[in-house]
Length: 403
Ligand SMILES: *Cc1c(COP(=O)(O)O)cnc(C)c1O
Image (cartoon, rainbow, N blue to C red; front, side):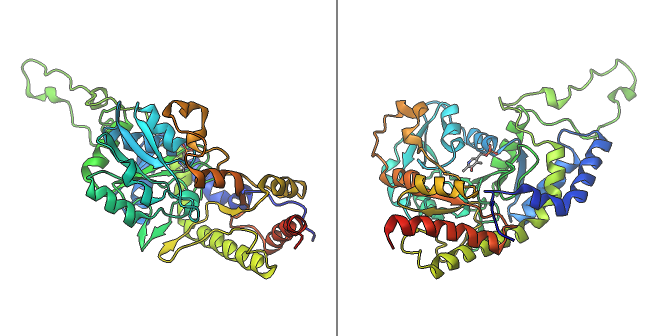
């Protein structure tokens, strides 16, 4: 069978084998009519805490809200600064700004695309409130170096692990390395819900408690049925005043950052498959490397790396080529889906013009924005599809380079 189409992502291929299980889980929630918090969310939190090897896993409404609520729990606000990479999905810096704080941007390491730890210390000021590294594409940032700087300056570290669920760094899981880890269940992430969802992980009891409180408008959630005490007025005499439901007592100003029970139920079906799906992505990544190597293209096409001690989960497989936009058009014409993550670094975004960064401020990020392209990497990709992708790239780059 000749290949004529390779989508960037094929969620149908992942869904069909688990369709019955997922529909049963959705039906279970429908039959319970419990859509907010409740047993599905609690069970998912327990299961993911085990899977991600953390003490606390807190379901939230999105990866963006995971970042927002984690930063709120650290007390980040007006006049504060948070140090982060200039090269990530918008939410990373957007959440800092939304809290009235300033994202202090740092260039990336050109090989890993993650924040360059060697440039962090120079960005620290008395206003620095936290460091927010991103584990971009599913590869952990260099956390030993980052945590050493953080400890020296007594700064908390929030991991943006939205692309890195199951990723490891020297044996430890993404999300367990810093003070808190923020995950996204956006459908195209490695563990995707059927809509928006997210998670905050932490090993810090106090921080986790603050995040839980902020998730429900700064109030303790309604006591679950069964935990409710019987009427207080049994003692006779004047009737005691009714106890105010704790969900209407707000200790701090939070938000509605809850994860839906329906999403939790879907995620509970999908989570046990994650390790196998990740292995399939890793196998595909290794196969791409072999194919590029076999055609002698690894000198022309920059390939992703997995430094020793790292476990990459390949949320994206990102290559680097001289005429990226030309290659992208060539692949598109051949029916091959690609994406650019990300075409404009934060310091060149219109909404961050007031931060005052000049073009050229972060040359490695600007080069990555110009030269990189994400190829299809999802687990169900076939050998034939991968061969087709690499051969189609070959026809472009060999013409370009006259190789
Ligand atoms: C996806 C993503 C987010 C935001 O997650 P949402 O669930 O879409 O809100 C944040 N940071 C990074 C690096 C992401 O890739």
